[in-house]
Length: 587
Image (tube, rainbow, N blue to C red; front, side, top):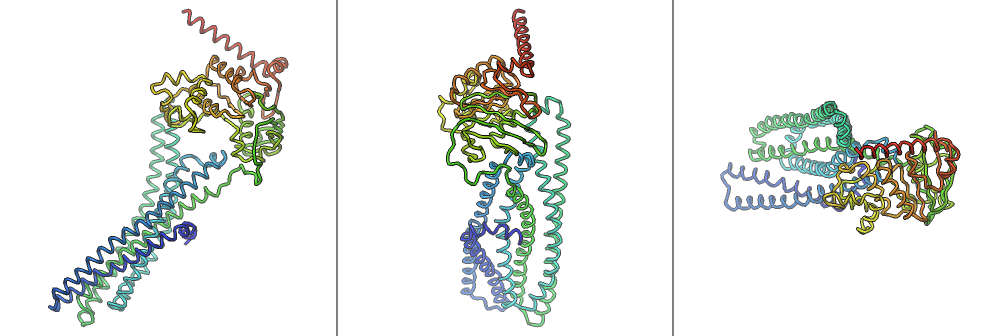
């Protein structure tokens, strides 16, 4: 009943279709009673020697009509019950996907990709079966059992009917016992399937790393172990599931034995005819399906309950990022101000006393050692996380006062870990707006210095790049991801160490293009290579989550601190590399 209550919203939504399907099922059960009854009357007429051609014709006519009626009605209930259950799966898949898109990064740290995929496939399939085959089994079994038993009780012989159903309560007890065991076993099987999904997803995504380390054999052995665990847990679930039918057969067999023994006694006393006995046994045989269906339903409900609990747990997760109840009606780019007193990742202090600001249209450079908090500053502006103590202002308004959609509509973000999709380069670049013209796409590629690389490929911009850009070099992936952001001409462009995989010449080209193209628009660049941010209006040096130095390039060089030492070291390294290239070219 727990699952029925939980799914009540869908049954109410599709009430009309379910009512039509249930009525069709009920009529099928009624038509099902006709053939055994006709058969019994014909047998009795044959035994009495008074069967006429007219009786035979009408009995055959009743059989044909009932057969055609059941054919049509079975089509109707399949369309209106099983077909409607597919709509249930569609609704749940959409709800899950929509929920996933609204969740913050912390959600994806808690749940792995393979686990989420298992919820969206295996668990929803189990619930679709419950809403379709489960409802069909419940209604058909109930109506067939009630109609058949009433006919046996009132039309044939009430005494023999009561005797025949004696084993059924014991069967119900056995079903309940197996159902509880099956519930726990299926839950373990579903969880193991999630683990298997995670293993496959991670292995396929990291296949190049696995091969580069020569780790294939160990990876295969690890997968074999996970696969074996899934197999064993599914076998355990299958064992309990497989016990249902044999158990039913045992108790139904007892019903047959009791019916034959006492039916024979009633016939010998002249209280029952052979034709009635044939009809009674046929009806008893018809009861086997409802009994099997009830156990099938019990099994489906157990599985559906497990799956619904898993999906419900996901849907109950709330995002760390909450929309303002009364967001500002519009948004415009403006001055940007950071006033962060404190921010932590999972209780680990990450930023303290970070205060700075830039004017609209200026360029901000953020540098510092690895782990100093550079990327965190960008993610806070994107509201992937929210500031704990302090605030960030855009155009003199706290960014929390804007709707997320409005805020992010101003921004183009190129993360350190570029995500490209298994589609053409053209579609990747215009991913945010498929209506962008080819001229805009090509211009963005030229700005990022990747146009010539693309045109050298067999299909140019129509080249399919494979999942996550597997066919591209690191530098090509970075520049295509940057082209995707620039194609939207955002008011605020954020490049998170997005030039790390390109050479110095290409970096210089991109930086110059950004300076020329983004006049009046805000640009924020984090980098380890300082040559990418020397033109910035403001550069801040982060260390241990706080600002160590600030100023423009000339001011920071004059301070002769971390920035000065790092810049000098990098310039020396570049000079040595250039000299080495010249020597090699001369040879």
